[in-house]
Amino acid sequence: MTASRFLITLPIAPGTGPDPRAAAPLPPFVTDPRRGRYGPFDHLAEAGRAAEMAGFDGVVAPFTPEGEESLVTVAALLRQSRWLNGVAGFHPAVTTPVYAAKLSASLQRFSDGRLAWWPVVDLDPAVARAQGDFLEGPDRYARADEFLTVAKGVWRSEDYTYEGRFFQVLAGGFHGPLSGRPFPAVYLSGTSAEALDLSARHADVHVFETTDEAALDAGIAGLDARAAERGRAPARALRLRVLAREDGEEARAHARGLEGEALAGSYEEVAEALRGYAARGIGAFVLEARPHLEETYRLGEHLLPLLAEEFAHAD
Image (tube, rainbow, N blue to C red; front, side, top):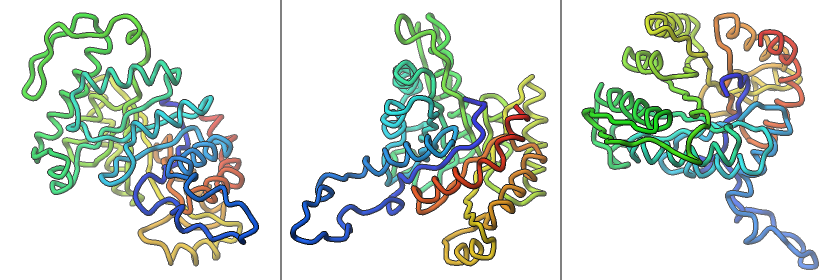
């Protein structure tokens, strides 16, 4: 899972997929198989197939308070694909680490080990409270540390006991069919000292979300220093929105009409920008593109081939 180079973000947030109710009506003499039969998961299933066919290594189902549940979405997509990896973003306060580990142990069995976790720690306090979580400040990272420690503990030991501030386990641990599978690769993000410390202890992949080169360099240096003290070296990823076309000016013109910042340009220009981030130490990219299906196929056809040879060489 940590070898994934290119992942595409799934459209699970409200408003990121098509509204089947808005489908254009067909003439009366044509039977419309879409009405009432094309639901939200059909679009997500198409998104998963598009990612697989386009050559992406995996998909990311981000945590979205009002969107589809990410673990359920990823589980469904993994079952219908052969090799696609799935990263599920979730808020670690919504369940116990033992239950999350058990749920994931089954998903690892059903998907041959293609599930990854992205615990979202630094939620907006109002969003967290709406999820039933009133913990704020650095304690959120202390709880996430315990969450991951306990989840890994019951996963890897048949007799596991833990006594912490937030979680306790007495004589836990997995046996039989739940044991023996690899623990889900852990993705984490954030730039605070607490976030980098947590990644240094637990992350397989730390995802940066800034394209500012100075901030990115500082974040990588901070992560590497903390991880080295623990004898670890998490991979680094970059999450960014992209819009690429044959003509760079056309892409930049489209990007001006988008909400938020996007890396826009010709396929060669975007590929060169990604090479630049790779040269700074970024090993994986979590891309976001809309409209999702069309852009996933477009990136797979025109952008990924430009990078395939050199990234394969880097592996």
